[in-house]
Image (cartoon, rainbow, N blue to C red):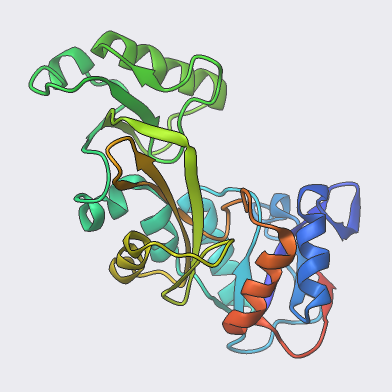
Length: 272
């Protein structure tokens, strides 16, 4: 098993500063790592040195990619004889909310999927919700305005702001029923090979249920408590691009090693 981390743009032999602590923690536990420049993918200069081993499983840990970008990364890995641990299909299944919603709709807020140029007043006229949580297929609005709308007109406002600040609407628009959740209770769980893991060791039954429903070798589950006491699924994510949140870096590295990612010897190589 190999791990791919983004390289520092000013030092091709060092990991990006944002991933440096994780890179050092996993290599210290015997996981084999490479560094790569994502900017080289479109240029066709993905040339691993030394060559990837035939059939070797490879796991990406880095910046968020669109499904098209991830498909290109997976193609380049495969072209060198290795195998992406997470297929493009599994990546998109957890990366885009509409791809996992059907499997988990009873565990998560009700959601309507619309194009970015929809007539939101018309499309939402039949729902009687206390409010709306608005995001594209991947992310919500993270400015002080936030993603909560009280009217369809505010839904359109938030969609415009997401596009303004992020440069695009990825995939489409998700309008979610606003539930009375307690954001301070949100917790992230990593699912590796179908087995869910918690930073403190305590995995709720809800997360175990979700882990059985979703087909992906490495993904995240974000859960939040509602004021009525229920746990609710907030989001899934491809574990390759999910940050650790409150996970201690040592605990995270141990998780990967215990899951069988360790190669048996430290090996750090650079993909120029």
